[in-house]
Image 1 (cartoon, rainbow, N blue to C red):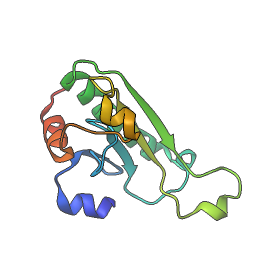
Image 2: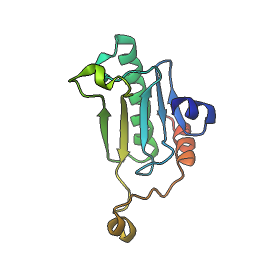
Image 3: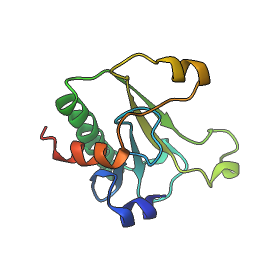
Length: 135
Protein backbone atom coordinates (compact mmCIF):
# COMPACT_ATOMS: atom_id res chain seq x y z
CA UNK A 1 0.00 0.00 0.00
CA UNK A 2 2.80 2.41 0.85
CA UNK A 3 4.57 1.62 -2.44
CA UNK A 4 1.32 2.25 -4.30
CA UNK A 5 0.66 5.56 -2.54
CA UNK A 6 4.24 6.69 -3.22
CA UNK A 7 3.90 5.78 -6.92
CA UNK A 8 0.51 7.52 -7.22
CA UNK A 9 1.74 10.65 -5.36
CA UNK A 10 -1.85 11.97 -5.06
CA UNK A 11 -2.77 11.29 -1.45
CA UNK A 12 0.54 11.91 0.33
CA UNK A 13 0.22 14.82 2.74
CA UNK A 14 3.69 14.58 4.32
CA UNK A 15 6.63 12.23 4.51
CA UNK A 16 10.06 12.12 6.07
CA UNK A 17 12.77 9.49 6.08
CA UNK A 18 10.81 7.07 8.30
CA UNK A 19 7.08 7.94 8.12
CA UNK A 20 4.43 8.75 5.56
CA UNK A 21 1.11 10.57 6.11
CA UNK A 22 -1.62 9.82 3.58
CA UNK A 23 -5.25 10.60 2.95
CA UNK A 24 -6.48 7.02 2.49
CA UNK A 25 -7.98 5.92 -0.82
CA UNK A 26 -11.26 4.98 0.92
CA UNK A 27 -11.65 7.27 3.94
CA UNK A 28 -14.24 6.79 6.66
CA UNK A 29 -14.45 10.53 7.32
CA UNK A 30 -13.60 13.68 5.40
CA UNK A 31 -9.91 14.52 5.81
CA UNK A 32 -9.05 11.21 7.48
CA UNK A 33 -5.29 10.74 7.70
CA UNK A 34 -3.12 7.69 8.33
CA UNK A 35 0.49 7.59 9.41
CA UNK A 36 2.56 4.55 8.44
CA UNK A 37 6.18 3.69 9.11
CA UNK A 38 7.96 3.26 5.78
CA UNK A 39 9.86 0.23 7.01
CA UNK A 40 7.88 -2.82 8.02
CA UNK A 41 7.20 -3.15 11.73
CA UNK A 42 4.37 -4.99 13.44
CA UNK A 43 4.88 -3.34 16.83
CA UNK A 44 4.52 0.35 17.61
CA UNK A 45 6.51 -0.14 20.81
CA UNK A 46 9.61 -1.41 18.95
CA UNK A 47 10.56 2.01 17.53
CA UNK A 48 14.07 3.28 18.09
CA UNK A 49 14.76 6.94 18.94
CA UNK A 50 15.13 8.03 15.29
CA UNK A 51 11.76 6.54 14.39
CA UNK A 52 10.14 8.14 17.45
CA UNK A 53 11.42 11.56 16.34
CA UNK A 54 10.21 10.93 12.80
CA UNK A 55 6.79 9.90 14.11
CA UNK A 56 6.63 13.02 16.30
CA UNK A 57 7.36 15.15 13.23
CA UNK A 58 4.71 13.32 11.17
CA UNK A 59 2.11 13.72 13.95
CA UNK A 60 2.96 17.42 14.30
CA UNK A 61 2.52 17.91 10.55
CA UNK A 62 -0.72 15.91 10.31
CA UNK A 63 -2.40 17.41 13.37
CA UNK A 64 -1.06 20.89 12.64
CA UNK A 65 -2.49 20.86 9.13
CA UNK A 66 -5.87 19.66 10.41
CA UNK A 67 -5.81 22.38 13.08
CA UNK A 68 -4.82 25.21 10.73
CA UNK A 69 -6.69 24.05 7.64
CA UNK A 70 -9.95 22.94 9.24
CA UNK A 71 -10.40 25.54 11.98
CA UNK A 72 -9.25 23.40 14.92
CA UNK A 73 -11.57 20.51 14.03
CA UNK A 74 -12.16 17.85 16.69
CA UNK A 75 -10.66 14.43 15.95
CA UNK A 76 -9.91 11.03 17.38
CA UNK A 77 -6.78 9.05 16.68
CA UNK A 78 -5.93 5.41 17.17
CA UNK A 79 -2.69 3.46 17.22
CA UNK A 80 -3.12 0.09 15.53
CA UNK A 81 -0.39 -2.35 16.54
CA UNK A 82 -0.05 -6.11 16.64
CA UNK A 83 -1.00 -7.84 19.91
CA UNK A 84 1.85 -8.10 22.40
CA UNK A 85 1.24 -11.77 23.12
CA UNK A 86 2.50 -14.43 20.71
CA UNK A 87 4.77 -11.90 18.98
CA UNK A 88 5.96 -14.30 16.27
CA UNK A 89 2.38 -14.96 15.21
CA UNK A 90 1.69 -11.37 14.08
CA UNK A 91 4.90 -10.43 12.27
CA UNK A 92 2.92 -9.76 9.06
CA UNK A 93 1.03 -6.84 10.66
CA UNK A 94 2.10 -3.25 9.83
CA UNK A 95 1.34 -0.84 12.67
CA UNK A 96 -0.16 2.55 11.82
CA UNK A 97 -2.07 5.50 13.23
CA UNK A 98 -5.52 6.58 12.02
CA UNK A 99 -6.64 10.18 12.54
CA UNK A 100 -10.40 10.61 12.13
CA UNK A 101 -11.67 14.20 12.14
CA UNK A 102 -15.21 14.60 13.42
CA UNK A 103 -17.69 15.22 10.62
CA UNK A 104 -18.62 18.91 10.30
CA UNK A 105 -22.24 17.82 9.94
CA UNK A 106 -24.05 15.09 11.86
CA UNK A 107 -24.85 11.80 10.11
CA UNK A 108 -27.98 12.02 7.99
CA UNK A 109 -30.50 9.58 6.53
CA UNK A 110 -28.14 7.52 4.40
CA UNK A 111 -25.51 7.10 7.10
CA UNK A 112 -28.08 6.35 9.79
CA UNK A 113 -30.12 4.01 7.60
CA UNK A 114 -27.21 2.00 6.21
CA UNK A 115 -24.50 2.39 8.88
CA UNK A 116 -22.15 3.37 6.02
CA UNK A 117 -19.95 6.43 6.40
CA UNK A 118 -19.87 8.95 3.58
CA UNK A 119 -17.01 11.37 2.99
CA UNK A 120 -18.10 14.43 0.99
CA UNK A 121 -14.56 15.12 -0.29
CA UNK A 122 -12.37 13.15 -2.65
CA UNK A 123 -9.27 11.95 -0.72
CA UNK A 124 -7.00 13.23 -3.53
CA UNK A 125 -8.48 16.71 -3.07
CA UNK A 126 -8.23 16.46 0.72
CA UNK A 127 -4.53 15.61 0.48
CA UNK A 128 -3.89 18.42 -2.00
CA UNK A 129 -5.62 20.89 0.29
CA UNK A 130 -3.76 19.73 3.40
CA UNK A 131 -0.39 19.78 1.60
CA UNK A 132 -0.97 23.49 0.98
CA UNK A 133 -1.80 24.33 4.61
CA UNK A 134 0.98 26.17 6.43
CA UNK A 135 1.41 25.42 10.12
